[in-house]
Image (cartoon, rainbow, N blue to C red):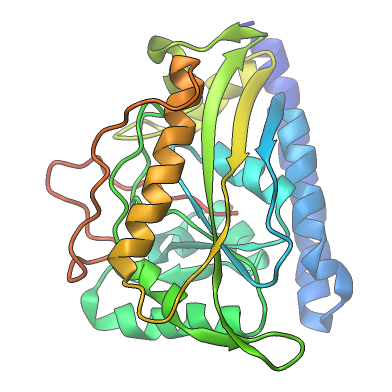
Length: 296
């Protein structure tokens, strides 16, 4: 169903109330280091997902190791609700998100790692990501560096994936590589009917789209089915380059998205190459759309 203002009003009102109620609870939990601080974000995103009528079709299996670096494609702020409801993990987001009204506060409350696009700050933020991984925190990263239209997967920027090259110790004190799991997210159906290329913008938020307007439209929809596929996880080997990691992840994610859009299993995909290792992890090409990497 498309275009129900009454439904949108009810959903957005409930979303705002839920957010305002749980934000101080999470803030207190973080301040006092209560165990619920790690599970409340997942509960919150599950309720948000339900409010917005987002139905998840799961494929594959989530890696059970800790820590895991989940590498995902990104087309909408709704990805945050979807992944946040499934994974006990924190997001990696661009530094500007921290200053967003409401969403910036939510990001901080979920212990998001903020990264600066400036090359001078890249090392510092990579160290913070590595520190979190060393402390066995699962992290979710969107290496496209921007949001897409949902019909394709943009090239993964390899520089930020260099954080996966560190060696960490497991519970037994044995040194090992970081476990990386590619994850593809594809809006697939609206009220049970295939969501074609011309309607995928109802989910995807990209370019110069107004967020408030897009959120209102999304709230008017009926049941939106999102296919989330967890691809085969892999442990980063000593000496494996960040470009190899990026290409491995991109190939799996792009094939997952393509298989949902085309309705086929293994299909040919394009643009599988990742940028050179010297590329800035967040510096979009001048022809790319403006960044819309949200975090919650």
